Amino acid sequence: ETMQAELRAQRPLRDLLAMRVGADGRQHVVSFSGEPMFGPGGALLGYWGLARDVTVEWHTRAAVELSEQRYRQLLEQIPSPFIVHRGGRVLAANPAAAQLFGYPGAAAMIGMSMLELNHPSSRAQSAARIADMDAMPVGGSVPALELRMLRADGMELFVQARVIRVAHVDGPASLSVY
Image (cartoon, rainbow, N blue to C red; front, side):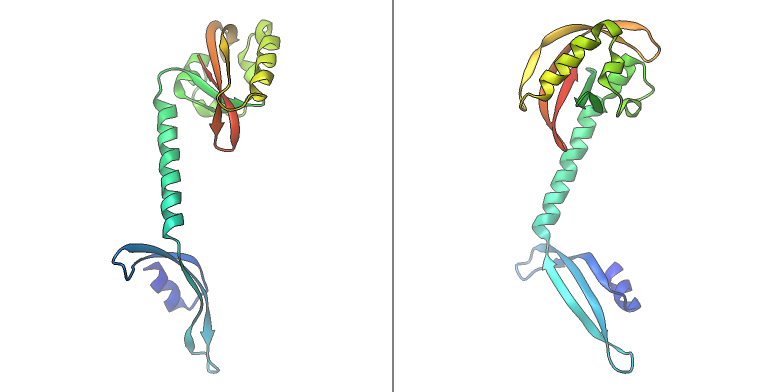
């Protein structure tokens, strides 16, 4: 439908996707790009352009999106509080971590310094541990450690933190589980 509308409007096509049944009887995803060509009187003669089969890329992108969706669902549903961080900054957290640390939701923790969650007496130890983790390869870990932490409301709490280096969307990160 979208392609037909674009053709009727005689507009250029840019990476317009369409499903087509190929000679092999299977459905293919085809990307169309082209420019309308007009005759001397302004009548549309046709389109000059390119059509290419992007079925593999389309299925790959769909698989990645599904994987990311599953990751987000897993992140939200795990009952153990955890935070994903890199360079001492929170990249992701689950609702259980937001609840533990007294934030209205996980999104409120994104971008904050991990050291803000630490009681002043634990900050130096945590900063060294964060630096050690950031230097480790994916799969590396440090032993569990009891830390004195702070909730958003200033209330102190003691937690046992386990940290492992993980592959994250845009590079290695640390996963702290409490």
